[in-house]
Image (tube, rainbow, N blue to C red; front, top):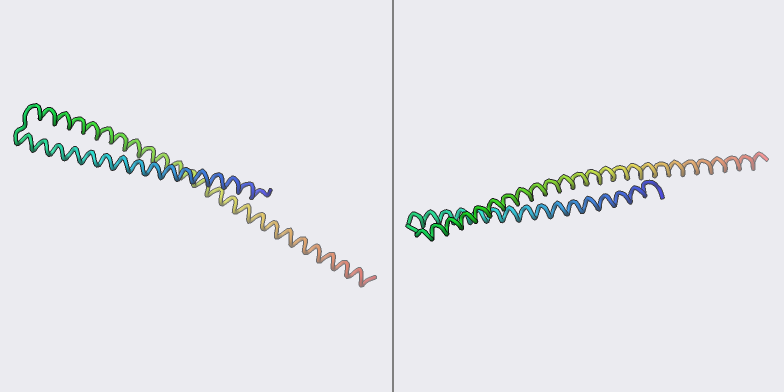
Length: 151
């Protein structure tokens, strides 16, 4: 097996790694988008309930209703904080997955260039070998013809 063929097997394995890392990156992007969408939804709810709370407080709300609303708003604020943490974590994971994919893509590209260079070198050496063989045949034929005419 020629060295370019052996390296081609390595290239396929590295390409497979790069594709898997790209898939992981895509999954991270989807996860980050879902987390960000959930955060936006929670923030919207929090703003809406805060506005409703202020309107009811101005209109006059009982003590029990006030406590219930405040407790609910506190739970909603905590959910927003937790979701913000998830978004930050998802973004960090996505960034790490992007770096991993970029590194794999760079390796795949480098190996691809090396395979190309080795393949071209092997083709050139093959052509040189064929040329030498052709020259040798022509030289033998010429010697044979001279020997036949000279004898």
